Structures are given as C-alpha cells and as structure tokens.
Length: 380
Image (cartoon, rainbow, N blue to C red; front, side, top):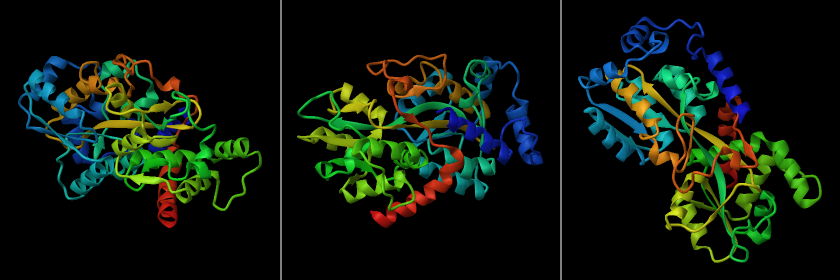
C-alpha cells in the first residue's frame, strides 16, 4: 500500500502539480487561486462560519460523483447550509472524460469531483490543472500525508473476491487464486470487464504489476514453475480466466447476483462495499479476505478549477469527509480521515482485515492500462 503513494507523490512532483513544487502558474490560474484562497493562498486557520456565510451568496455548484450514495448527502447538505448543490452520478471514466472535454472547451462546470481511477485523474485532469487540491486545515493536521497529495483521498475501497461454497459455507471453495483457471471452475467466475470497470482494471493492473507474487502463487498451487505464454504471470492469469469461460457482466450488482444465485461453488470479483447488501439480506455471499489478493483503490475528491463557488466546494468537501456527511460510506468503505469512525454492520472490516493487500503503482498504471486493454480485447 505504501508503495502506491510513493509513486503518486513522485509522479506528481515530476508533473509539477504538488503544492509548493515551485512550478509557475499562469496568471489567470494564480488569480483564481488567490481569490478562492486555495493552493498557496489557503489560510493557515480557516473561518468556517465565514466560509459558510460566503457560500450562501455563491451560484449553484455541481458535484460530479461516481456513487449514488451522494444524493441523500447532498440533500442534507443543502438544507444544513442553505446552499444549492446538484449531484450528477456517472462512471469514474465518464466523469474524467466529461471534465476533460469541458475544460478543453473553456467550460468550468465542475464544482467538486469525487471518483476513482487515480491514474487517469492524474493524466487527464491534473495535467491540465482542471482539478485543484483542497484539504481542510484541521484534517491536514491529522491525516496521513500519503492520502492528501496530489489530491485528497475521500475513502479507500478494495477490489476483492466474493464466493459461494454450498458444501462448506464460510470457507472459500478454493486454495489459491490460480484454481479459478482450472476445469472445475469453468464458467464459475463472474466479473465486470476491465474495459468498463475501473476497479476491475485496477485489479488486473495490481496482478500484472505484482507478477512475481503471482508466479510464486502459481508454483505453490501447481507444484511446478509457470511456463509463460504471455509477458508475465499476471497476464497469464487473465488469459487463464478468459479461456476458462469467465462470465463478463455489466456491473458489480450483476456479479453479486450471480454469486448469490449459484447453487454450487462460485466466485465473483467486485468492491468490498457490495457486502453491505449481504448485511441487509439482498445478497448472499462471503468476502475472501485471506486467500486471494485484494487490491487497494483510492477514491479522490477535489475542487473543479475556476468554479464560481469555491466556498461551497470547500464546505462540501469538509462535509463529505466528516462523520455525518460521510455516513453512507463509512459503513462500507474505509475513510482516509482519521477523525471519523467506521459505522454499521461492516464496521469491523478494515484495511488490516485483508491478508494480501496489493497496491497499483502509479508510474505503471497508465502503461499497464493500455497493455491490459489490448490484451483483453485480443483474448476476450
């Protein structure tokens, strides 16, 4: 996990995007940062009463988010602070594409953006200065710096395997992730395509970038060294899944539904947050936190550069990362803000619960994303 954020900071420094890195901002951007009190102009101590008062006279703000859980929070926020925020729910890749196109066209509609797909955010948005970093001062004093640069992490999610084991409930029906490529698992694995799902893509990037561990797990299971027909053991595993008739579905809900409906051993890949529907009785599956690798995914939040509502944006980010404002997530995902606690039936699940938690190095993500896209299209 630590390695991921080392790469994040290194890449950000190289691109000159980290605050205080010494890069010369264009006069127009610098003027906006100064008027919005962001970047180097952010006050050492923030007056939240004054920020809330200023927000009430600002134009409506648009929140681009990749989660529908934001809708009730935005309603609460609008009532609490007497402001107007509209949430638009899109896939993370769609948010990035929309903000990029708007920015290139000189349209600055984004007030706050909240999404995953970190490498694409850095490549497509931060490289253009289309999103501005903001961390409330009281949070900055306590949060781990690796969760604040070059953008604030709102929460972490984990790409993980779900399973159903009719013969022995509560016990994974496999000994090793490579077992999913064998005949007994033919057509008994479901996942969203990495071409449509950022989380699946990040998972495959994690497997490919940690190919040495994948190679060791292969030899542990099969009792002999892997004979590669592809570039490395990570690609070999992806090829094995495709050749074993993996079920490619549209969403993680479809994955959860497939595992729930299975009448024998079955596995599906998705985000750990779907387990909240198991708690409520909608689905029936278990999370594998011990045998198969899990891959960490940060969900980022930042202010749309040149927004006319910077005070509303600051207030919204502070609220979304608070105990109350983040409540819909703290029962299913993992907060980066150490001042809040996880709640609900999943509160005992945390990042330390995963025995094999692998990262997705930023400096490899974009390169591997293109490679995996081509590879998946070839073998699909």
